[in-house]
Length: 319
Image (cartoon, rainbow, N blue to C red; front, side, top):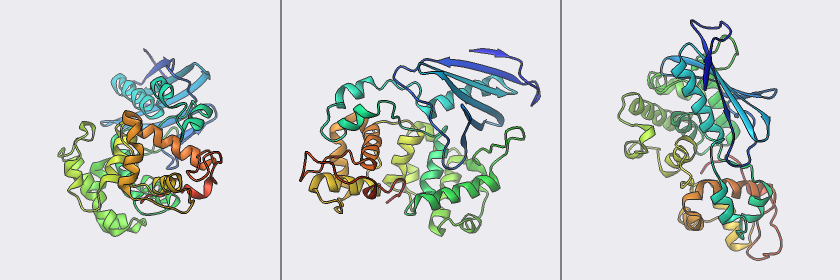
């Protein structure tokens, strides 16, 4: 990394650049549905905060084997941390060769693994973002949850005056809101209370989301295994975690095990299904979604034939 003076957009600004050579084939993806991460031309951009320090961070991929990250901030440490967070979110540093060597011939997801070696778990820049998203996505359609997230960001998230991007409001901001206000942006009342309680625990330091200790979260009403598994996979980078209660998985595993496209299993059966994938359960789940949406999953009743695709996967629909 090198630090150099940047265009004056903040007090005593610095710009840090970092070139990464991914250890496994990589494609820089698009923005996030909530608008926090945006694709602008060839650049993937994010406005975020490290403590109180604002950081504008971006990534471009000038060649297949190179990704360049750049960050601007008034603080060199914050700029470097901003790059680290975007690297984590994109999965650019993930070496997936062990997964592909083990599962490229898997009878269920092997065809998808061979067809799309670039697939990664697209994570959040920090665990709090994954937790907030998980709570807002409980038991409702994905599009409706995204609309709630966008309202929350638009009304409470700090805005970058130079890029127009916004950051997610931190736990201390959510903790200061009345549940009735959170419900006014279409969050169900029980979920509004749960989100505020999560924010209070995190803001007070009683829950360290980086420490993988979720016991206090599970003590909160409306917070269950699915929520903390979403946090683990997308917020903490735990590849061994799969959100087994996800409605899409209940349907997909039901179809695979019975050959019936309308079948649905229970959560323990989903956990049993993913057990052979071991420390790669989370990535195997991403491949199962991708395969299901494209009709690449063999039916148990007709192993030589692929089952119908998109209708069985409600992408983002949570159970």
